[in-house]
Length: 355
Length: 140
Image (cartoon, rainbow over all chains, first blue to last red):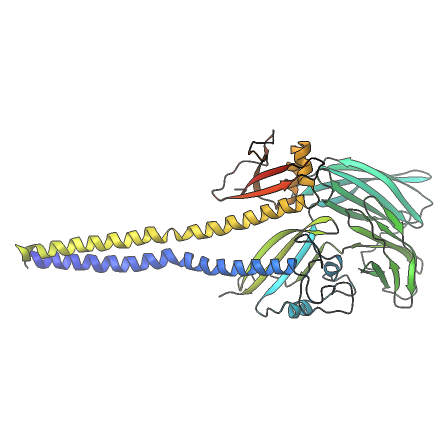
């Protein structure tokens, strides 16, 4: 065989080998980039949708205030607000399933007008307040309860000013103010004449900024049996600065109701009462704080305290993506939003079928 | 002589083809830059939103007027999502550094660093304007 043929055969083989390896390498190298480009477009779209949810006030713009109104288009922004990412207190409250007038997922999905997008919205305080009962000291006339209050964000302690309240039957203790560098111990003394179960409420305001506020609630037995879980006796639905308390059982009698913030508190008076529900008017507090609403009452011989917040946060509504991550493209966007001069963390999950 | 060199020319062609193919790989590797830019944009958006929220009631200007750098650092640490490192520098209108302490929550180990420039007007009796440079990175 002449040398030229060997050279040609060798060169052709080399070229074929190079072309084949180049094709394989190119597809191997470019696949993730092409895939990322698709994902980038989806992420960008979902990012814009989540911003749309938080920056638009929907149609009608006051759909949150009227419990009968189902919005034509969905948006959570406060109507007429000058601040971006300021949400409406009532629109947010209507996302919470605890509220009697909460919108269902189907209603929100329809109002969103995006049939290929499923969503989940979570709004919560920027940091957590964790309360633990660490000790009980009984005496002849009174009982001392020691609480440990932790204020932290993802395990990092936060310096706060604490304001605590204790509520029991015909009893409200208000003047409990403490400083905390992330952990504080609070002693509560309750007379043994006071009937429980009692509710311990702690508001925490970050030292560095008065708009960063959170709260914690602890229900404990005092001269009573163990407290029942939340919403055993009452369903509390605050909307448009009106509280609707709907008893779960007939024969429930409501006694006192309170609205609490960091700096102010108020006794609530009933405005309307019928067999189904009792309504109270809520005051407009000029305070950078969530309003914690406590209603006390009796169900036959059982005393109870039920509570909620206004806005009804923390809340989580929408689809459960936990089992569908493999089937769907799910993207999360987290925003800092403001509701009634308080900052909250809002996470929006958006997902659709994987392409 | 010419016919004997024909095979060698094919080999040169093959190497030229290889050169072109591998240069195309070099070009395609730059595609990943776009992804990094997107992530930086997200970080910058988070940083800007945080500064806007802190400035919405004039708190940001108050921190700077009072030289309360610890409070400013703490506020940023709380409001920014977990896992984000930041380094903030405050300049006056002459671009002289105003902050006398480091306003940061840790070192930057990430290669993706986002930059946000924000202009903050103090709400005190004397009008002052500050230029804030915020660098953000995902903690590694």
